[in-house]
Image (spheres, rainbow, N blue to C red):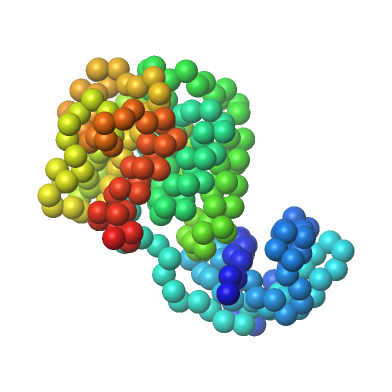
Length: 244
């Protein structure tokens, strides 16, 4: 039986009464058509997830009582950090949503030299808040109880130069013949780059290679940026993660 999952910021405790806001109540009652006594899973940013029963419904809110803590793990054994060259709002929504469903841990939106999408510095905070809401919604949909991180957008060069240990760094690049099986001794941490339709400059490719990024192909066809991100994460999870 399907049990919906809802995000709540506060700490959770067994037998605690939780009040959900009007928006959550509308989704639960109007969309999911749940009633008194129905079960809901509640999770928070503290890696807690509980099962609750709906105990009251009124005009503006819904209350449930936490009856059981859930210990089951929903996270992949891999830690995947996606560096995504910023695209349109519609494409970014798709990429973030599906990446979360596939088990991504961190997303950093990036500016490249050929990137045509510009974000006014005064609007970056609004963008990040919007992306965070997409992450919460995706976690609720797929049942994850840990929110992936969305970082502040930075330049590609800055992201490339960040020092990290024990990590496999991949640039998914359509002009290479290298396949994913080039990675012989997999680690648990991946840092992957997905470019835009405009691609990257040769100097950016060289910088990636100088900082130990491996060029890997996703096949003989050129993929759209939103397709490439999903195929890349799925491929990694299929070979090294929990989609085996």
